Image (tube, rainbow, N blue to C red; front, side, top):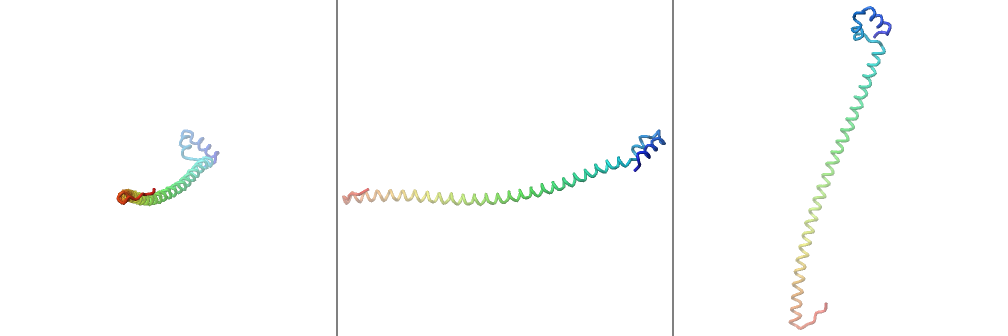
Length: 121
């Protein structure tokens, strides 16, 4: 690293090669700017790594939550299927009970006619 005065001296000494002097030698100020940009890049990289870790942990928790939700939905579907079967059984029993009740009503009416008994309703 050179001081600005040293760099000016080299430019004057190598007047034909000013571009080479600029590209080859740096002052403290120029090095500091590069170092600052490298530090900023390093800080951004660290921040991005932390954000990536945070994102990945959130994603894995969402996946786990999704898995638990699917399990709960499967249980609810199984319960719903069981209830649908129970409802179908009750409907069938209701139909059979209605048929039996109708048949018994007819038999009671026929018996009442045969015995000439009045049925109260």
